[in-house]
Length: 228
Length: 109
Image (cartoon, rainbow over all chains, first blue to last red; front, side, top):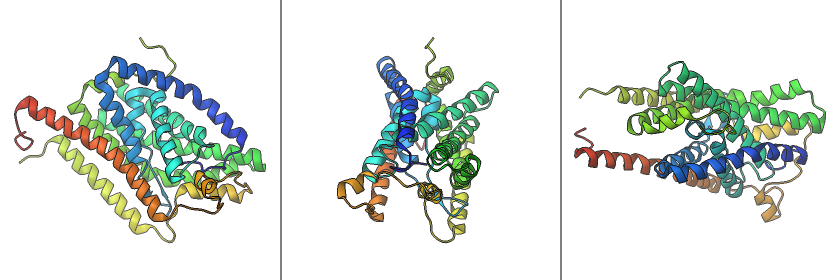
């Protein structure tokens, strides 16, 4: 889903950076707070980042004959919220932009907003709703991870659409349909696969480290809300 | 030896993932391109022209430079390995702690 270098007008690069910065800042603050107050959580934070590293590197084939990669943000957003997820995603995005020229630095803000903020936010909302409805850890994580993955690509399609609408006077509906057919259709089966992988790991964690789910259930959807 | 519910769940999930992956690999026709590149292609179709190249084209000074496929695969593998090492360490650490706590080996549990 990474938007390549130069494929967003400078004004849109700026807009998405402005959207990203408050989430990134609050994520850094929360990360420092977690590592200071709950040093036992260091391993789980590393694990959340590791899943983004591992899963976002897997380029998988899909129904359209194209390929894409999952995002792996489900664990991070469910355990630590959108802010921390934005920070961990940014680390991976910088790694890929710097070493593989996948994504880019001018599009870092847009890619972080889709992969680290808005996509995972939808996943977190699904997690909260399902947990409130009494669903188990496995089912909740499968749904949360799949939705976070899929919505990441929907947001990317919107970002690319807005860009061609303003730069090339394209029709919003036509461009959105075109971008969605490239990104979203390819992504549906991959989102299911990602959901199953993260769901299995969440199930494993629920038996080995049930304490992390107590923290996850206290986590707020709004990253700017004050801690109780 | 009866399987626990968790083990049945893991086996079922892995089976679904393997079947889906094999079906997609078998059904892919023609060029196997990424959706990231395809997204750029759609923008090109609307007449959009990228205003800057990626960091490698800037460093090499060649606007058409692309990382060789083998090198790109290697770097993706390095990225995957970083994640897998941390996850593997976590699982191993937990298994070790469990053994130390219960005094049993993994196979006895």
